[in-house]
Image (tube, rainbow, N blue to C red; front, top):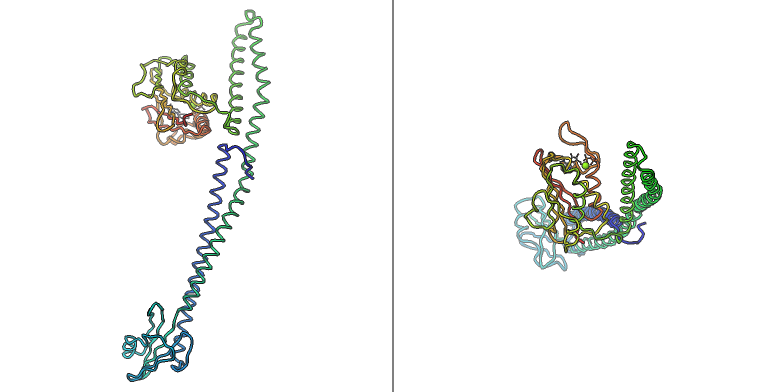
Length: 422
Ligand SMILES: Nc1ncnc2c1ncn2[C@@H]1O[C@H](COP(=O)(O)OP(=O)(O)OP(=O)(O)O)[C@@H](O)[C@H]1O
Ligand SMILES: [Mg+2]
């Protein structure tokens, strides 16, 4: 069952799924009940019609105008003389029906309403005599009204009960999913936690080795040790990210304020050695005019200003997301290309990070596919995509945001991340 607790995005997603499932079951039940009710109504209506027809035909054939039958009367018109049955309603026999019957012998059936009461009337000529049977349909109508009321009441109770039952059923059927999510999160958190200590030990040992008799080590070994320290560092970062994102999902309170502009500037700074003669432009003011070409805004300066570009989240995964986008932009531009990074406070409460380049671009058919893990390009004879953008989209979604891309082959690409402002 979905146990109560802090509303995490997963909890909200499961609660939404349970509500949708319950609503669908209740709606299905309502439709089934409505069909059943409508079918019953039609059958009863047809039955009543047949019953009225039989009663009128019987009265025409064997009825006696002198006999008083409840709600059924027989009028006999013989050469201008009318035989009225006892307690017959006013307005009968129907003169027009009698006149019509005089010219034909087939029984004519009609429905008339007189003083708010509906009557079924059959008129027939037998020799020189016209007989008219009249049935007051009040009690048939009353039966039908009772039936409709009963159906509505049963329907209301049934739908209410179905909604409660469906909600309970939906909660029960989604409960294993919630448990699976929690178990998966615990596993990630436990595994990363357990990995952290040996990794730190490995990192420290490698650093110690590097410092130990540093000048006496062969150059090749020093290089290898440097690579080992770097790899251990990267592994540490990955484990830290896993730990943070597992913690983030279970406890949104652990999020902190992160200035996206400062983060982007830091990432750009770190990528400087890879830029070659590419121009990277950063604009974190939200103004239409960009900073001068080649300028990389100082991270410290951005952090120091009254920043309107702050989001709530985990810094490390957010840095990984920005780094993925900038890494892609660098990989897909010529060494003389241009990359523009803009961070702005757009529509109400949204921070927008836009990274656009004038590089290779991509086929518009792949616009969504590039965000899928290892997806195959829809373009003829082309390659398989990687994992970076899929992870970046997950990080954005974890922070309540989105990533979208636009691009054209040979005309560059623009990636836009939208995150709720802190
Ligand atoms: N700036 C860009 N310009 C043009 N195409 C891009 C750009 N960024 C991403 N792409 C396209 O999107 C695909 C998916 O990118 P993604 O970062 O997910 O994987 P990758 O770069 O192929 O591999 P890796 O997992 O190593 O990052 C790329 O293969 C590329 O075709
Ligand atoms: Mg990539």
